[in-house]
Structure formats: C-alpha cells, structure tokens
Length: 589
Image 1 (spheres, rainbow, N blue to C red):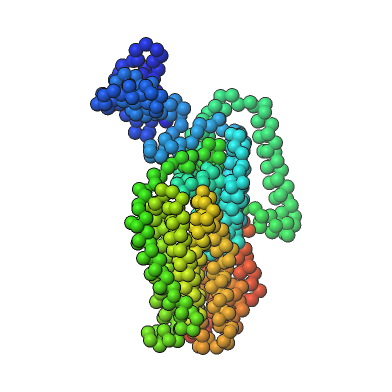
Image 2 (cartoon, rainbow, N blue to C red):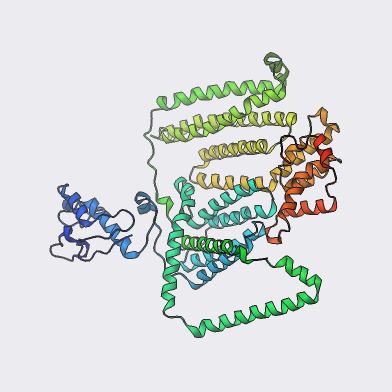
C-alpha cells in the first residue's frame, strides 16, 4: 500500500510543513500518483486546509492540500510502509483490504509444503479420495495461521468448513464429472466464507475473489518469512530432524524392497498403496506441487488476515411512493393468480378437456410450458430484488405493505414452481429421464427453496438471508452429487422398462443414450435382461477399460462398484446384436 515518502508533508512535525510539490512518491501498484499531482489537484480547491480542520477525514491537512487528496495520500503512504499490496481495485481495496499479519509461522510453511507434496503425489492420476488427502494439509495450515493470529472459530465458520469438506468428498463418491464440478465450485464458495467470515450480499458474492488477492499476499508472506529465516537457521535444531527423516526414508525403501521381493502378496499390497511416479510425469507433478503449495499459502494468509468484504456497502435505491411501486406488482400478482387458477383447474381433472381443445398429448403439453415456467421463476427473483431496492420505507406501515405485496408474489411463484415440476414429471413419464431433465428439475427445486427463504426473511428479518441462501445452495449441490444423477437417470429408465416388460409400450429403451453415462449408472443398468444389459453397459465398459488400472486414491466409489460388477458379470453381447438393438444409433463406434 504505501510509499517511500522521505521529506513528504506527512513527516513534518510542527512548524510549517514541507513543500508538497518537491516530495516524490513511489508507485504502489494501485495507481498512486506523485505528490506533485496531488498538490496540483489540491491547488484547484480553495479552502482545503480549512475543510480538514474540523476533525473529519481530512483533518490535519497542510496548507494548500485538499482534505480528500490528503487523506488518499496518507492511506497510500501507510500502505507503502506496511508492505501490504492488493490487486483489487482501489475503490474496493480501501474498504475490504486485509490487515497486516505477523511473520508466517513455521508450521504454516510446513503445511504448505505438505499440501504441495500431497497434490503432486495424489492428484496426478485424477481426483477421487486424493483430493481430500491433498486438502487436509491446507486446512491444517489455515487453522494454524488463524490460531497464530488469535482468530476464534465462530459457529458459521465451522459450518462452512464442514460443508466444504463434505462437498470435496463428492468426487470420491461419484464418477460423473458434472456433479463433481458443481461440488468443487460450491466448495470454493464455502471455503471462502469460512476464511473471510462474510455475512452480507457483497461479502457472500465477492468472498471467492479473496482467493485471488490472498494468493499474491500469501506468496509474499511466505517469501518474507523464508528470507527472515535464511540468515539465522538454527542447525542444531533442524539438522537432527532432517537426518532422522533421511534415515527413515532409506530404511523404508530398503526393507520395503526386500519384503516385496520376498512375498508376492505383500508386493501387490505395496503396489496398490504407493503411487506410481515416473520421470515422464515430472513436469505435471511439479506444477501440481506448486499449485498445491500456493493455494495452501493463500488459504493460510486469508485465515490470518481475511479481506473484509462486508465493509463494502451498496447504497439503497431511491424509495418510491406506494402507488408508483405497488401498481406494477399488484398487476403481476393478478396475472400470476389467473395463471395458477388455470393450472389448478387442469390439475384436478381438466387435462382431458384441455388436451382435447388444444390437440396436444400429455407430453407435448408438458414440454410446451416447462421452460417458460422456469424462466418465469428466474425473472420473478429479479423482480423481487429490484422491488426491494426501490420499496417505500418511510415507516412501519410501508414495511407491512411491502411484505404483503411481495409475500403474495412469492406464494404465487411457488405454485408456478409446482406446476413446472408437474409438467416435467409428465414429460419424464412419456419420454424417460435424461441428464438435462434431472438438472433443470433440480434447478427449479432450488429456485423454490430460495423463494421460501425470501418469504421467511420477510417475517424473521433479512440479516441472515445471504448466508442462508449460500448454505441452501451448497446443501442442494451436495444432495445433487450424493443423489448420483447418472445413477438416477439409469434407475428411472430401467424401472420404466421393468414396469411394462415390453419396451414398445413405454417408448423404446434408449440404449444409445446409456453409452454416454458414467460408471455411476452401472448398478441400475445391470438389472436389464440380456442382451440389452450388455449393450447398455458397452460404452461404460469400454471407457473403464481405456482408463487402465487406476490407483485407489484416484478411483471413486462409483467407479469401484462398476468395475466390480463388470468383473463378475462381463459384457457378452456382440457388436452385431447391439447394433440391431439401436445401441450405436448416432454414435461412432
């Protein structure tokens, strides 16, 4: 943050201050200008010194300085002297800038090295359980840094940390990449909330950006700590530890090799437990080591001195009169009420009449409206956010009026959510379940959860709403991953086939679609009769075979179960038989 300011006005004590135009200011990386520019800007404002004499932000400004320019100069000078630097824009940096920290503890440096080594060893072959193993040292380093900085763990921070660990377990349980990716993104959000302790909307939304800032700060923090230790290394303290570790490593390699050559079962056990690292993997492993260590340092730096995103304030919109604000919303409420009345009439026995008048089938009727209702739900959330910004707030009567109008809109929107989910259910009954359909249905359920939380905030207060939405979103992502979407898709389609026993009566069993599913779908597809079973599992079997032997730390539970099933009951149907069943329709074999 600051600058070298020898001879700058801020160093003057008593008497006449030094001439500001003669004091050069070093650039601090945030756009700091020379003092000459600040002085010239100050000269365009008459009465600058008088403005700072009242004890305000510019109090104590020398003659000829604008109080605001003097305050900016002081802040930047202090930043330069402290050595703290941030890549955040200046407008945010002044509000959210993390505090200075004590020198990095040795335990934090060791935890960062351990995180780097674990990343290099366990993440080179994939995620799986290795991701959790690599994250544990980083979490330990963050805890040690926070403890050294005397930060206490609050209940919300503990909940965020536990949720983060649970989300990181999804890749270890499910083979499908898309729910695992959602889980990793949600884990980043919860990890940022655990480190920064944010509770407002700007804090919740901007906390993940703190990792970018703390990465730069963490590298500088570690480098300063290493430099300070380099000149005074206590060899009598660290040399025995290094010698003991070296001797232990030699003994492990020597006796491990002897025992492995003496017993084939023990050799197989060692091969399964120890990672296989070749020289060709060196560059990739080195990159993983650097990434793991840097991210661990970033987490530790944020734990020791988090960015204060909650200090960022968003100015509320100009309140409107009741008529100007409520008239559009009341009209929208009436429109929602009319639409929902039609939906309820159709739900309670009116399908046949509607389908007869429109000429649509059940599936066509469902497909026609689901996407429109999904967009209507999303736009309703936007309307509610804008309405809250410009809502009248002169007194208690205005607040009650806002609650009634928006509460009615939320309640009607929940009926729209239920209608959309009912349409999706009809569509799935007709055509089966796919990844896209299960995803959008899950999104509609999440939107319904957000609306329920907004309604609760209208009654109980909105201070907890940002964290509740973040927690609800993370819980939804965790449930989505644990539910195993690919397994659910296979389960529903197989159950639909078993319900009729004749695929032509319930729509053709889409064997071609099953080829793109992950190993999570194998237990459900294994229930199909031959040759459909083998044809449905053919694509997954080929994919697992192409992966070769996967180490235990890179294999998910879903992949392990699939390999076990396919090993006990291999794929037997020939290519010609599967082609006759349409297995390769639209696919290149």
